[in-house]
Amino acid sequence: MNSMQLGSVLTRSVASVATTMIVGLGSPALAGAINLNFTKLNGLAGFGYTAIYRADLSGLGFDLQSLTIQDGSFGLGGATGQYSGFDLDAIRLSRTLIDDASSVTDLSGLDVFDFSPSKTLFSPGTQRSPEDAPNLFGSIGKTINQGLATLNSFDAVFDFWEGWQGFLSLGDGGRISFDLTSAVETVNPLYLYLAEVGDNGELAAGSIVASDKPVITPEPETPQSTPEPSLLLGFTLLGLWASSKRQPPQKVEVAKHP
Image 1 (cartoon, rainbow, N blue to C red):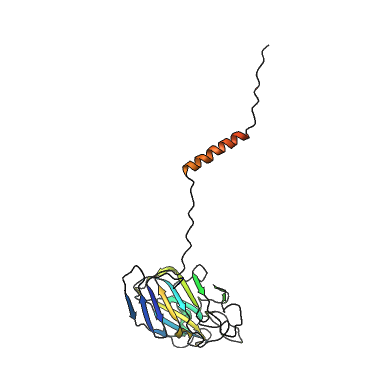
Image 2: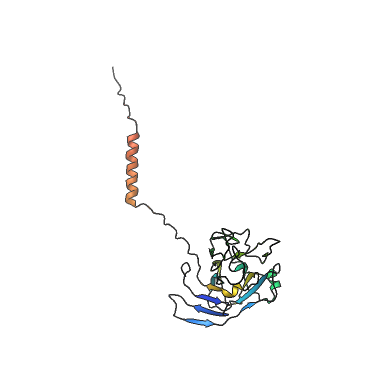
């Protein structure tokens, strides 16, 4: 994990429907496997193109601070060019359990996502041949194009005739991480909902990481230097000397007595 801080992380391999929790440096050396199902909900959402998957994050044992989605399709399923890799329509954390994809539109979610560059780290994957655009769909370089990729809404349109919009393509091997705006406790019921555009099984080749550490390291603040007292005194004396040099000579008149 080059850009990711080690913490207590939860790696969900959807392909094996298994979860591995890794306790990072500074914690007791403990690693265990937790068999948790990543469930595909009944039906499709949005405009009938989007599959919804649900993961149970209840009882992780730590407050959730970040989530990462890693594509692992590498040419399996899906489209080519700018639409390569896992196509993410939306991501949502909720305390509510639903079983039907059609219910996701009305699902109340936690207001903890900020899709701006300050809270989102996107590492684009590669385009499958033929490459047909300078950027993956829904992005401009490493930044989410929020005019195209509305990740807070289950609203993807995936149609040659109506136009494609509302989602982000990760590219083959691409990765996106979200730092939450506030830590989310996992003692009470907590569910992660992901929407995959096209329902072509690309999520099954990927992985999800939930961590108690933020992914994006804030830039350290540059401390403001304070001049030493002796330096201040030097500046003061220098100022007085310069001021005296600028004073015009004083003309003194001597009174004459007859």
